[in-house]
Length: 465
Image (cartoon, rainbow, N blue to C red; front, side, top):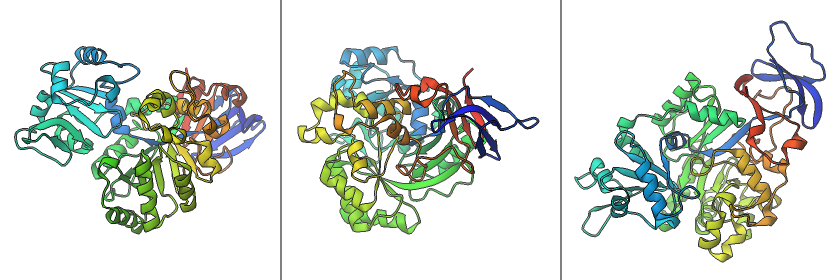
């Protein structure tokens, strides 16, 4: 392929030749070859393809068949009752997502029975850590008939409350009749936003999930390159567009693990030749993780996922250990107004930091955490620049980034978030995002609607008609 009249790193018009899945030349007026496909960039910026460094593909695909049950669509108990009442069951279930306690409090089976009488409801908290079931859902899973699992909450007499903690994989196995979700709509949607690479950060990923993703890659349903985090027993992938990433370790402040055992899990990941990625959304979780890396030793590729509360002292220790942070700047917009009410005042200045971490020497990449956040990286970039909540308030304004740095959060290499951004230069993989305008115009609004085309290994995976 020959891409003509593109702006590359502020220079243009330039032509870019792609051969064998890589960029072969970047120059002015490259002569077309016979039979060569040509793409006129018309002066638009040609960028490295975006890489979402943290999302959850199967959950994102399943969300397409779910009803949104939290802000901004649903804000009150009455809103929730209407949303569940209007939902169409799929395989006998009403599946809800994005619930937040501000809507109707901490729900259990009795609450859901009142909100959706007689329906088998499974409702996911927006944290992704909790499912809430109605009594009909509890019955369908057999939770009061001898079926049990760690994470099934029970009341004093031993009856299931309907609340299931961190049981995504178990629940998916129990609901096998649903079948795996179709990844093709997700792949197409992300390609339309210029996303050419993905890191699936689901802790429960194992051999079965790898097989699903490799099949999706082979069929073309998932055109992006994929870095797969997961369990310690995750095999090495065989598909050329799928790679194995860090062992994912999850911390929950309400039930922190034995410290020595957790440090041992980090050492075990390192001994197997893999990095460790630790989920931390509170100050206590981050302190625990930093201490565990101190005890186990950090290695290149070790990551902190979210670092939602990162006060200066902990940020300094993260930098000293050489740990990378993969952040979600868009949560400032999506959740900032709730944070202002719910988060301890002492933690508010350190929420979802960006500029402060980078200035302190912490490599910083970003992911959308979709479906627990919007899957559009351009929204995340815009939030990283503006630091505005949904109501317009500014949260941590000193943490804002210039548009170029916000873009860099999504253009660093898959295996090294926060490293130097990939470049459009000879020898680089032809994973590219073409905008319909020069960067100087696109930087003002950072909107995904400006994506004109996306290429993976030189193959067009999206082109605006």
